[in-house]
Image 1 (cartoon, rainbow, N blue to C red):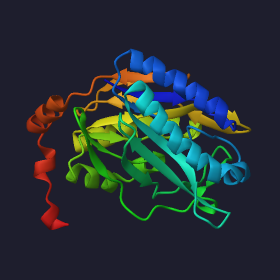
Image 2: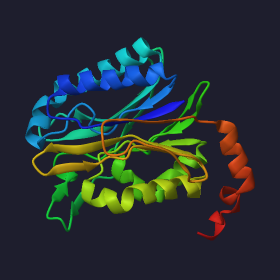
Image 3: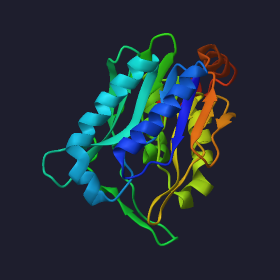
Image 4: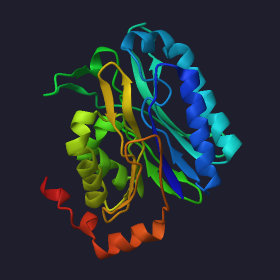
Length: 269
């Protein structure tokens, strides 16, 4: 079983950590073995405060993930947290996948940054305070579960990234996010299903939801989607979790029935 947690994170890390642990405990009691936390799970607030907190928060997040994974015996993805780059003005946006024993299985720094002007009047410029990662996301074998490929939020709009992950053997694509309410209502589910269908892979997408501060409003609808594109679980608009089984034999069956990955004409491109 896997869970995509859904949070309304605030600018108070300790409050956020307490809420996350409560949700992890609830999921573990339901037999969940793999848990994804959304982007910005430990902090959702103004850029200035995030930069001020980033040094201590980075260490807190890594320790927290290790502690939670060991305590509840789950594989745990921290979907995105700030890591200082040393100039006092910018951070990386990093996710870490931690095994049941607390061992770091994989790490990824977000490469696609959300710089957009939306029709609702909101402007986002992640590149002003975030440095893009310089390496493609990894694929890691999670013993007893599946092969997992990492990504973060805005990455979902770049299908070539997910082709890379599937080419490296991914059976499950993790897409933690803090998708805006404005874009989410039109694009979130259809993008997740597209990434699932075209790659015949599971998608596990933990998300932020609700109002965090001022006009910052997230869409919610954490989802788990199967390799056929069927939504197995949707957390709706409130804090909680989308929970569903992950079956690698189902991936194999779908890829045999719909062998589109084998039909790619890569030599023509």
